Length: 419
Image (cartoon, rainbow, N blue to C red; front, side, top):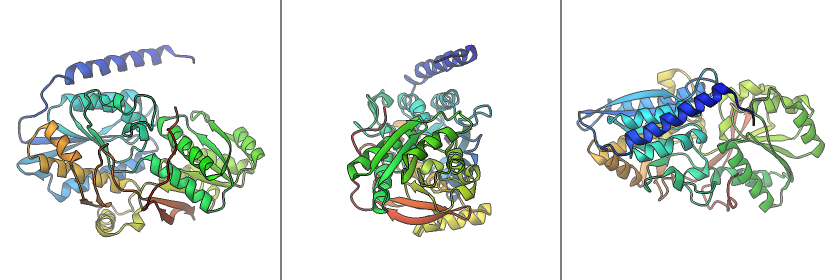
């Protein structure tokens, strides 16, 4: 691997900032003074994910607005942090480290909502854990963040240097989404699949879990490759895949790691099989990048939950209020931003004091929570007990719901995510 001098300097600065954060926040007190409590979010607010994260932030704000940004005697101040850069067009390790360190050092910050990308979570989690700061994610789905024995060696323990759990998420993890995607493929007559991934934490993890479940089900995995997400096009790769004649091409990745370009190049190469992608592509930006004609009725997306137009109860009310307030439909993850806001407020209410340890304990003890997503609890790992996945397609340039899976028992997801 070749390294540029600038990259080395940036890497050194990032390490220095990381170490400084550990020294600065590891031994400080975990309670704050004053009547202001800060809730921060760290999401990619620059680049092609912005449309999705705009709606997540809107969801957080709606939860806070419902209580007038007040909990007991405390006033809530919300800070919207960006972990992306214009140069990268997506999240960067340096920005996420900076955000986590900033939040850890500010004794008024009691809740950190984020991240959007699972790789970013891996950067932030140890810093926030040492600071005893509650981290609630609306979108991280990599299994190794919470589930012992499911991720890389040493996960999730290496994200918990204090030995305590401080990270939780309101979205189901990939050990639900990936195998149910394979189950759906089997149910609909898929006999062979070619699997691609973006070689990142989330993408490679979910692609490997999907491939493992396909093998368990008797679906032939014709090949599995990682792409270079910095490449401009993948026509030669699509020609290679076409030669294998799969019934389905599966891509573990996101819009930002070229999900749309792959769909374009499938068409250009004359590859006519179906395409399946996970929730990292479940945003309008994916359709725009691919071109609707390259997706219509051939692309299927799995998502840990239900799309906005399938919500009921409090979730349906949220969607209606969102439309009234912002004049458009929320993206798929908006409701998870809203749910994170509700969870943060519930943790603050239960704790009743400006103390990070008490707030973490109050959050992880949430049981039978009546939120916008339904009735659910946090389990012993900080994962939601919700076990619901939707399969969606693209029709006329818009996402369309196909069916719901996962309310019952979920099949074994396989031994581990990608290494």
